[in-house]
Length: 375
Image 1 (tube, rainbow, N blue to C red):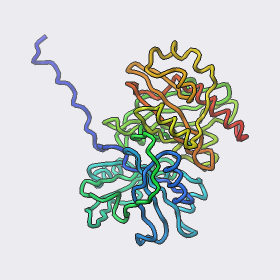
Image 2: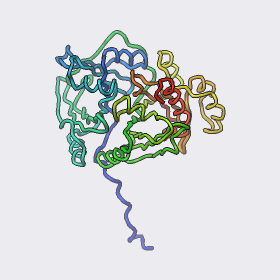
Image 3: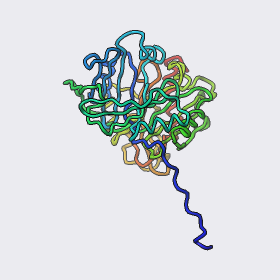
Image 4: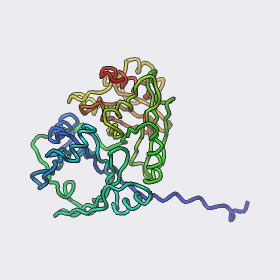
């Protein structure tokens, strides 16, 4: 064959929405000061910034805590009848904003709204003596929004309007490094709608999908698809209920949250044994799997670096894919309603999401549902 007539390789698709990572996650909570204290004391987050009455804001206050690259903004209303208060009345404490770090918040807004995203606010630039930040925002599932943040011209502590928060109380960090992924729960028949949204509006691609045969127990089932941006720094699994004999964890979430929303935040560590030991000592409660899970663990996942007895003592799960293995564990809900929880994950080559642990995990969740009388 004449090499001159061979077709040139197809050019990779242009990433019209380059994202550098998760900028911050904002939770609407009924008491921001107490929530900040919880995340400091129980999870090792460090105080970073504050906005409220002392900074000239009259309707709300926000405490910002950080650990590694993870920033949580905890926002509470300061008076009745506010949008924040109505959000809390309807959903309870939970995630309102998943903010994404971009190079150009104008372009991110134009590209996504041009493709059908519903705008929340157009690009706005805020400034102080430390520079300026431009942000814009679009809607996603439920009342959750994505804010695009360009902070390339800013040297301040967090955002204009915030001041440094420097309390004496600073518990040690627990070894959490960055957001690995965030999981959204959506209603019956809505998963593919939001898969298309992330594919068509935000340029994400599907990494993997699980149906009710993959994620089911004797009683409950769900379906899930994992969407990822171009560089893989943002991963959003999306869950939908599936028919089962009893009420699934996704159905329970939808009932108590009042609709679609962020179910859990997966945070990465480089030493899950040390991190989970520290979190347990501070009062974080994790889901428990039966001892039988560990009886054939080595046969199922092959050789691992960690001590099996330590993994069993702490309740850490292990799964392997073609590229390595991962270790993971899930907290019980960290808010009053059985909605938001955290996952702690350590990846040792694996890029997957623990498919081999689904049955054990969801049976553990069902045991908690049974105790709550919601199974």
